[in-house]
Amino acid sequence: MKENVRVVVLGKNHSTPLGVIRSLGVNGYTLDVFYVAKTENESHVLKGSKYVSKVMEIVGRYDEDIVNMLMKEYESATETLVLFPTDDYTSSLIDRNRDVLSTRFLMPYIVGNKQGAITHFMDKSVQSALAHQFDLPTAPEWLISLDGEIVIPEELPYPCF
Image (tube, rainbow, N blue to C red):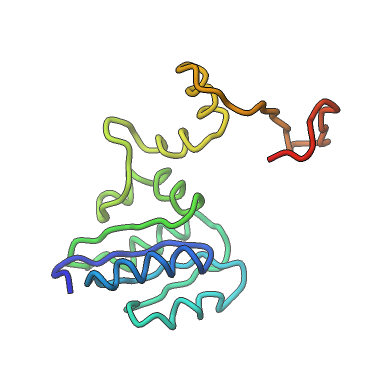
């Protein structure tokens, strides 16, 4: 085992966390899983991994509850703690709460930027604007608001992504 390091894998589905768990476990890391579920006991698949020490599950995407649960669970930990997100939601969650979580955990971040920087660059319209600044070709895009009545432009081609 990698001494004095505990990795907390965060996820909301099974496939990606299982791949990460296996990769880190084979390489000797101590692993816990924090699973964001839609319904109770969804994390049972992850509990079956021989590499997992502990699985914590929370039902629902309640950011404040998740952050509080992580901080409380590891408040007396003595080893180095690493948060390893496995999807957009958990990546954005820890990024948006970096100021609090970084007091206890190592985690991904953008050097020289503040809390929320990763989430900012995850925005497809931000990515598109950056691509245009550097003359990189991009697919046409349409922004459709989901607030109120949803209006889909007639010129929107199908199929679309």
